Length: 136
Image (cartoon, rainbow, N blue to C red; front, side, top):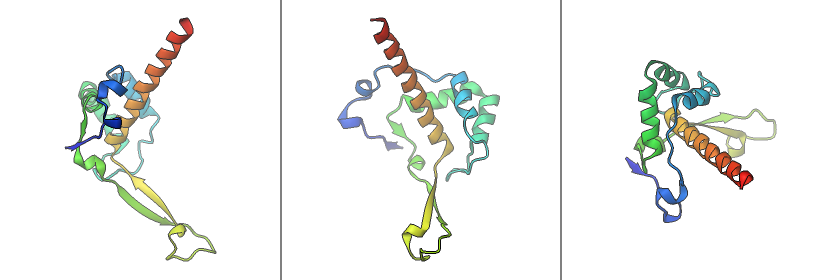
């Protein structure tokens, strides 16, 4: 596993003030927003597969996501992606010009799901803190 660098050398509690766990309902909400048939990353796993796992074994997927959310390590394979250059059909650009291509980056769906879960937890934390400020 590759170690995830800490922000400015801080330990996780310093920049993650409250450690929460993602719930099944939150994961369902996140996956409902994703395109189930999106192109898979290097692992070949699509959001559709993760939705099926969530339906069949919700606690398993939640535990897996929560383990990653509370870890400072990520699997090495998550640092890889597939990059596909797609030629832009334009009259002025030659095929050997890098500007003539649009890059499509395919990342692992589970990696992206962990990122979305982290964002959802941070969003909820910030909203809760704003509510506390309004009541002070």
